[in-house]
Length: 195
Image (tube, rainbow, N blue to C red; front, side):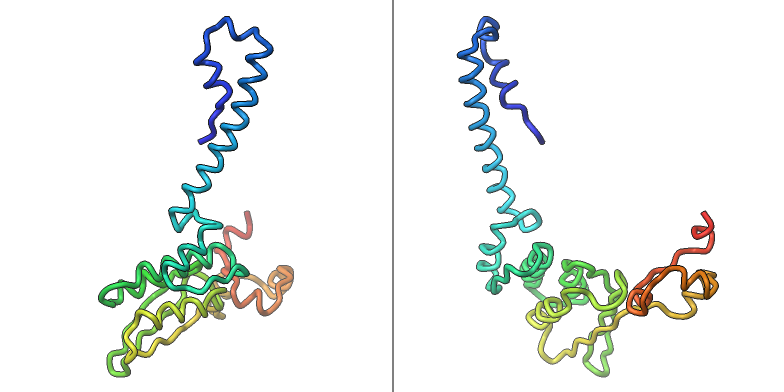
């Protein structure tokens, strides 16, 4: 919420001060300083919440026992912190899903293979490898019991899906995509191409 502090200050003064250059100058300077203070206070307040913290992420990481890596983007660092905070308690499939969902591109499908003591995690939110797979694996290893194996599966473009898009080879080549880009591409229905 943006606030006009100068206007608020002037509203509190009697009307006869509105024509005084001295009062106008003094009020403007005070309003500038109060705006700086207000902005800094809002910034400090944002650090109390993982979802909005920036420079305060290192304190959250320290609290959770996570090594600070300033080279990682804020979103990935937040994901690791949220995972650590959510991962306490009894581990169920819902808990595992909640832990992975806290990561960027963490939309998954879970499957249990009881005979092999295995939990299979299939990433369905994005195609290919998620950018922070190492962090996901590390977070899961901290919360999932040691006797369970964690297996990851990833989704890629399959021929049937490409056929459903109804593209000719010329149209597909016209997309100018590399094989790596094509593997993670999500084709849309044919009608949308014609629009």
